[in-house]
Image (cartoon, rainbow, N blue to C red; front, top):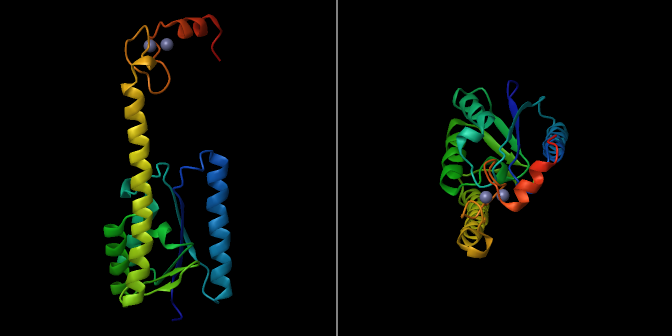
Length: 192
Ligand SMILES: [Zn+2]
Ligand SMILES: [Zn+2]
């Protein structure tokens, strides 16, 4: 075990953390917590991997470059232990989460969660813990995203919210070409 390499994986994906400052704070908090955790166990100094995926609903690899890098390190047998704050940091997708955590275990990399403890997905209990964590996370992000979608649909269909100039419902900011009363008024003011 003398050459065991330990990695920390931290990420923020929570859409409640909208400002850069808060997101930064949360990543630093996770890293500080996990570094302490590592020290308490007497493990070697960890390598830090971190992602900031801005969309809470997507959990794809494109938005998680450091996770991909971590998987490559695990596959190359360069990391033997990964510490995460909780299992949803690893994944918020049941199929993918189980697949990758199983792959890591088979290669000989242990995933430890500071909330759930050591997770051995090859045991019935470990598999259950992982599956439940990933399942709940995916369910929550799916229902959140469907709520947002149906809310947008409702606004789009609300004829009373139609722009008098463009004849459509602007879901976000009015386009620059809009000449409704509100926009014309705004154009009178100087732009920043
Ligand atoms: Zn308009
Ligand atoms: Zn307008």
